[in-house]
Length: 235
Image 1 (cartoon, rainbow, N blue to C red):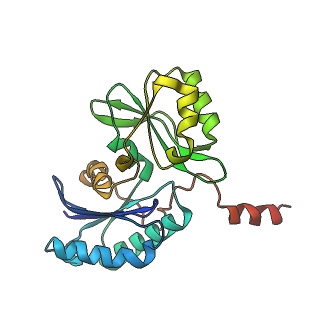
Image 2 (image 1 turned 60 degrees about the vertical axis):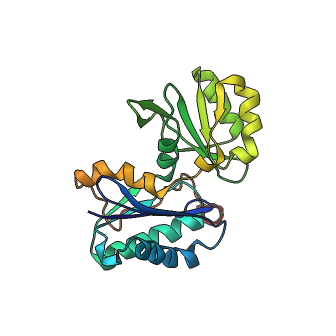
């Protein structure tokens, strides 16, 4: 069973091919813009370099966010199109779960922080048990100060942060949490398609697939345009 996974929620376009036991091939491209125009050619190149064809793919795995609204819509529509045209199952894996998985340090709380604009971050808390990551909280959108205050109140002794919001707010976490805050290296701030495949393997084995048109991105909050629409049409 060959899986094709990709994630367009961040400035890194990440694509991977894998089976039940290994990652066959992967490519990661820094693309702050241009996911739509680069996704299909990058998939074609990855398949050719892996001596595979698109018809060899049995499952689509898509990073479902939270993250860039535009990137998430592009990725989800493309994933659903592949699944429909190839008549194969699809699985959505939260992009944030992939970030947590890559940074699963023992005896630490993992705290991805993704820039949500407007002075806020998308986040969730994870614990690590027997090398696996488990949710402590659901996905939230908070100001960095609110998040740091919650972490202080919870009394966690070791918190590992990872995500592009560190470029903006690392000093906030460092100031309020002091030596309890640790920061992952920048190369581990982004979701990786290979980790999406690893996280999807148990669901694949259990044939726990998503319904094609019920699978939607994890937005956490409305987009600014949607919020404006709602305000205009209240009542």
